[in-house]
Length: 556
Ligand code: COA
Image 1 (tube, rainbow, N blue to C red):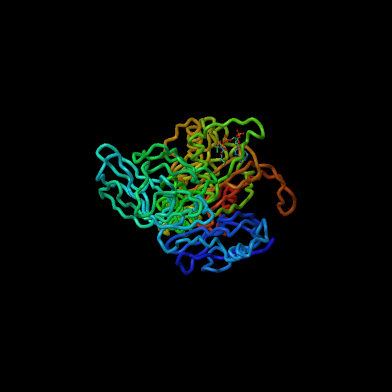
Image 2 (image 1 turned 45 degrees about the horizontal axis):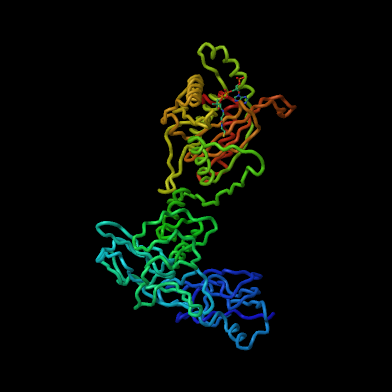
C-alpha cells in the first residue's frame, strides 16, 4: 500500500475557498469519490471527493482554513493494487478526480447527493416549464426556491395557479439553484425558462439525471420520472405532473442528512444554531433562513434570554426505553405539574443560587406557642410554627430591604417593593401551590395563623383565586411537619429569596458552661446572588434566627 496526497482539485475558477466541514477522520475507510471535505466560496459550497479507495492517514487542514487548487488537505493509503499503472498513479497523486470541477464561481451549491460518480462534473442547466396539460399563460403565485438552495428532483421550483387549480412545477434536476429567471405574477407556459441550476452530471456512465441542457426540451413525461438513483427519501412520484399537490411535511427522522444551502449553513454557524435540531420548512424539509431565524427566536423565548436574562440552551435528557428494565405505566402530567416543572427549571437556569444554613433556637418560642393552645381552641385557630416564621421573615425583610426586590434585567433596574407579601408553599394532592399572604408586617400572629390555615386549605381544595397566588416578595417553604435536616430550596423567581424550614429537633447546645438541651429549628435560605451578596444572606438568616429565638425582638 502506498501513501498518497489528497489535493484540492481545480475549483472551477474560484481562487481560494474555506474549509467549512471535514467529513472524514484519520483511520476512516473511504471509497473513491466519497466526500472528504466541504469547502465554501462566497457563492457556493461543494464537497471534495476522495481520489480513490483507501484509508485516511492524515487530515492536514482544519475547519476555517483557506485552501486553493493543488493544496494538500490530507494523506491516504490506497487500498487494492498499490502497483497500478503509472498513469493511474499519476492521476491519483494529482488529487481528486481530475474531471471534477466544482463550480464555485457560479451562485448556488453543488448537490451533495448522490455522491458524484466516476467521471462526474458540474454543469450549468436551465430548468424550464414542462407540458402543462394544455394550460398556458398561468401566473406564478409563489417562487419556492432561493438562489443558493439545494434542491432534489421533483422539489417544487415555483407554484402556479390557473382558474381551476394550484400546482407546483417541480425541478427536473437535483442540484443547486442559481439565477431565478422568473418573478411572482409572471405568466408562464410550456418551455418558459424558470431557473438556472448547477448540477452534478455523469459524463461517462450515460446516467440521465435531468432534462437536456439549456436549449433542450424537457422529456414528454415531464416532471417526475427521473427519480431513480436519488439518495433522498422521497414522496411517491409516479404520475406525470405538473399538477402535483403540496407534500405533507413530516419531521425529519433523527440522524437524517441535513438539507440546507450554503447561505443557511453560514447563518446557522453565525448564530451557533445546530442545524440538526432545526426542522426544515422548505421542500423536502430543506432548512431555509426563516427556519434558522425562527429556531433562534424560539430558543431565546424558551430560555427567557430576551434582553438580559441568563437562560441557557441545554440539551434535553434522552430517555432510555424503560420497559427494557421492567414493566412501566405512563400517565399524562397534570397542567399544574407541568407548569411547576417549567417554573422550577426557569428559576434554576436563570438564578445563580446560594443557600445558607442556620439553626434557630426556638425553645422559648415553642413554649410560648404551646401556651397558646387553649386560646387557639377558643378562637378555632391552630397556632403552628408557621405564623412565627411569617412574622419573623416580614420583620427581617423590613430591616434588610435589599431582599424585598425583583430584578428587571431588561430595563437594568431593581424593583424595590414597598409592601411585604409572603408566599407559603403548600403541599396539595395536585402538587405544590404557593398562596400569598398580603401585608404580613401589618398582621398579628392569630390573624396570620388563621389566614395561612385558610389559604392552605383552599389550596388543597383547589379553591384559590389567581389573585391569592400572586404578588409575593418572598416565600417560606416549610417541611418542618414532615422531616429532614436541611435542603436547598429554589428561589421562586422573580422573588430573590426563599426560606426553607426543616424539622425542629432537640440538640445539645453549649451555653459557655455546659451543654443545654435546646429545640433547634434548621433554616435554609436560598437567594439570588445577582440581587444580594453573601454578607446580606448571612445577615438575613441570622436575623430570622434571632427573631425566632427571642420573640420580644418582633415588637421592636
Ligand atoms: N419542626 C417540627 N415540627 C413542626 C415544624 C417544624 N419546623 N413545623 C410544623 N411542625 C409541626 C406542627 O407544629 C404540627 O404539629 P402539631 O400538630 O403537633 O402541632 C405538625 O408539624 C403539622 O403542621 P402543619 O399542619 O404542617 O402546619 P404548618 O403551619 O407548620 O404548615 C403548611 C402549613 C401549609 C406549610 C404545610 O402543611 C405544608 O404544606 N408544608 C409543605 C410545604 C411544601 O410542600 N414545600 C415544598 C418544598 S419543595
